[in-house]
Amino acid sequence: MDLNAVVVLMDNLWVAIGAILVFFMLGGFILLEAGSTRMKNAGHIAGKTIFTAGIGTLVFWAVGYGFIYGEGNAFIGLSNFFYGDYSAADGGLTPAVDFSFQVMFALVSLTIAFGGFAERAKLSVYVIFAVVFSAIIYPIVAHWIWGGGWLAEHGKQDFAGSTVVHLTGAMAALAATMILKPRIGKYNKNGSSNQLAGHNQVYTALGVLILWVGWFGFNGASTFGVADGFLGFVLLNTQLAAGAGAIAAMFTVWAVKGKADVPTTLNGALAGLVAITASCGFVEPWAAVIIGLIGGIMVVFSMDLFDKLKIDDPIAALSVHGTVGVWGTLSNGLFAVPALSTDIEWGQAGLFYGGGFAQLGVQALGVVASGAFAFVVSFIVLKVLDKIIGLRVSEEEEIMGLDISEHGSYGYPEHMTLEETKVTTAATVEK
Image (cartoon, rainbow, N blue to C red; front, side, top):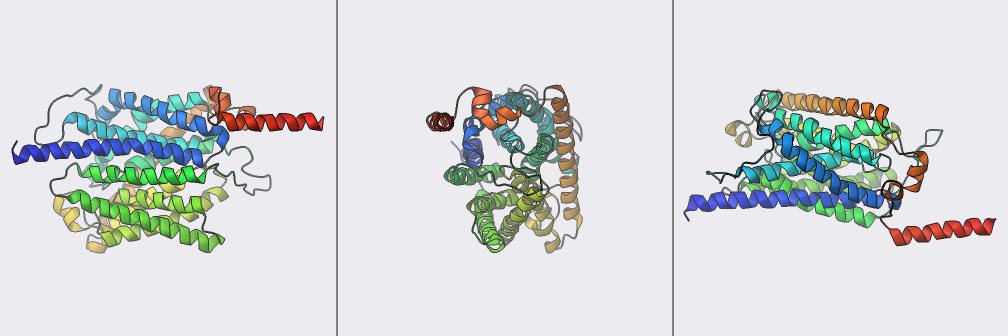
């Protein structure tokens, strides 16, 4: 086997491993979302993540990939549907390895979107929206930026998806949250907010750790190769930004509220990861630290802002993936270095490296266009569904919990049965 063949083999192996790491991130989302919400909904949250991943995979295979990478126009691709290219590598990735990597990004974005549905949406809504999001919303945004669409023609920089994956999912989550309205008991009549605490901070922390590890595939394998070792640089930037985000969030919430709140600190780590996702292959390590620090600070104030606006976001998807996704995208326009942008003809250098405001303007255009598209289409689809079948479970079902009302069993059957026994016994004694 000659050296070129070895390089091709290693490139394909690395991206395949990256696909597995990104898919494993769904396990992180299960623990993060379940731990950040209440016990009576844990089984539902875990289960819907798995079956919507199945739906998303099949829809992406049928039409999503073609809408992104198929031959078409500046708005959408129009070929490669029902993807089945089994050809071998010809000096690069095999088509099947590339497809396997791309579908995982779509599933992550879909999972982020469902953060806005948490603890109150009907199971049927998850099914229908998974189809629409995987077929239309995500693929069109991805085509614009990664598939040679109109934003790509303008030089939009998004190395691994701060806009394509995170902002797109967050804007869909925002549309859902606005239509579904807050969970029962979240806000009082006088406008004050109640903390509906998640049931397991250890789950949440473990979920964040799994996501952090998965991000090495998310960002690192987006190099699509190993030959020049550039993946190491991307991994370095990713790690630095995540660490900076966690530290910044912890000290910020500690200074503002007097306690080093654990969930906020965990969201800070995720904020650092989201922030660096667009720029991990464009910026120097010192800039990665700054990007992560600002992301960690932003997430604290963004969470408070959404709460004051009475937008109930149980897992902080809007702040972590939306607000910080915007910052991560714009950061390229400030910190992108010529050698990693202009010299390889992927956009221009950032403002701080002599590129002026050109790339910052392109990044802002991408944020506005992609975010608006994802929000408007999601809002229309969900509003229609709300009129036809209703998005939200009944008040009784929500109080009961989606585990039992939607699935007929509890995620924690022993514990929940014990709680029911206590309630029944207390009622009997009272009588």
